Image (cartoon, rainbow, N blue to C red):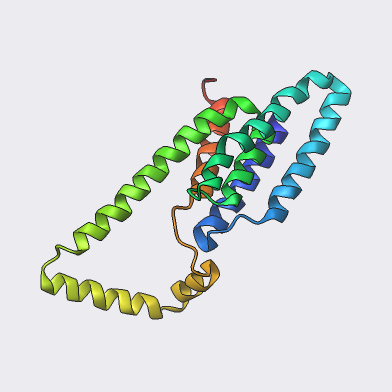
Length: 181
């Protein structure tokens, strides 16, 4: 369990950074984690029996099938779905529901904040509107933020994979060092 948790946490940290920065989840990271997880699972099955593989295989299938409809209706990116499936493989099917609930709550707070800010901007007094406009113009010209905008390539939306990563790290810490759920 510890090696799978460490692999899931390492992958999650990389996905969090990538999703926040570029709104991307690189396939090579997912495939690499899946390959390492498969090797760990094969080693574990040789020493402890094949029964240890069932929660991981179920997690992969359940993770993929549960978020795939959201990709089909374009509410979610393919990277989010694939990352959730890999998390299911690494952490087992038991982790999927708490990780999904936590990530969905964080994404909901994010969405409320974005829509709240958009509606608030429409009702700002003129001096604050001008100040906000000036800050926006300077922000767009800032090299670091310009680089982020280029990395995103026009991709917008809520960084759901980042929230999946955050909650998977929390779930892993809770199950390893806290009271088991």
